[in-house]
Length: 100
Image 1 (spheres, rainbow, N blue to C red):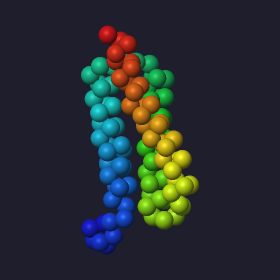
Image 2: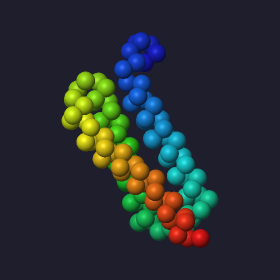
Image 3: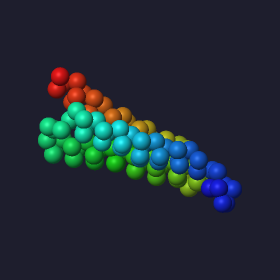
Image 4: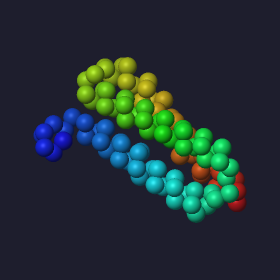
């Protein structure tokens, strides 16, 4: 974006960084500190939900801000993706509260 001067995808970039890296890092810290005894299947479900939501969000935002699809088409994809990310964020919290 800096070299081209085209900042149309800045929202996409911010969401990829926050959802793709920061929240993933927070999940890793939570798993390392408080959820060491969870099953591998639970961890896989958590990972798949988060990656599916983050990927859908990245693709949906890229398509919408790149004017590939209209907002009416990208909106439901972004809503579902956001819901998946929120569910994935709630999973470790629920598991850590239940474990106390």
